[in-house]
Image 1: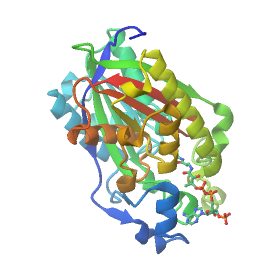
Image 2: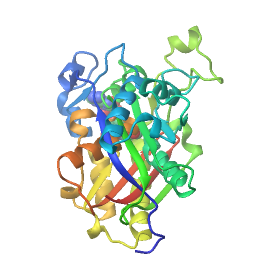
Image 3: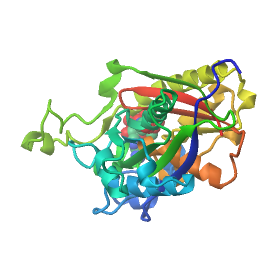
Length: 331
Ligand code: UT7
């Protein structure tokens, strides 16, 4: 191994997916699309949509409690709570504070949101790693939770077919037997902000009659440009973390990529030299749950026995900003 020995590991994961399934056929009734187009262009068959009265914090809290339970921790053991979401319950205060209250961790830890769109989970795990490395805490809870159904324009066929709701959580703790984060690489490109954004609702364009009528508060995306940038940046980041860890593509036991589009996943895996038999995909069932895709994927993969002690796991993600990154972890 090339780099310094790992200091932090993911010791437990959990997920929460809402029960309601919305299929591609259901979307045919809403916009001019077809099940065939969606499957062939994206790989998505269905997605989960949360009820009106269940928020991102509600879903995140459920995933958080699951991860704490699996790690054998109680809420008062948490030193830091980092939450990633593109769909905060409120613009102010943070969704992290909402989740902190729901799980009974108020006052006993610091809680804050980290905004990196779909790349949020990887950024947050790196922040957690830094906390552990600096000796600032032993138990960091990362929660990625998204209610994408509230920010997609259900009349825009280019975006509404892509996204779903759900949450994933992970507990980050000090390494025990040499397992944990071997290498990571994160970048962002602020010049590409216009490719994927919600223009209204912040301080620059507060909600008013005009912005609401023009749906400026909804997600808008230049899909084709994002697609190309995603493949390039994730493939580069993936190759880089493999090399930095002193490994080769053949050492990777499972790749758990951000689930945005099956074609993006296939191209990224190909460029990184990883066969699709070693790539975890659940996009067909959940669509793109933004920052929650990787923790949900890790949790399902572990449950299915696809990863176990000693597995080398490559995670890659990209999202609005644009942001991107990769992380290599020994389980
Ligand atoms: O987590 C980060 C979030 N971002 C992403 O995941 C976006 C990455 N980009 C993509 O996944 C793909 O670019 C899309 C799936 C969004 C679009 O696929 P594409 O192959 O890039 O299609 P396109 O945008 O070039 O559109 C091709 C055609 C267009 O029609 P014309 O102009 O050729 O007549 C679109 O109007 O497909 C049309 N189209 C649709 N047709 C049926 C776009 N959306 C749909 C739809 N159903 N839902």
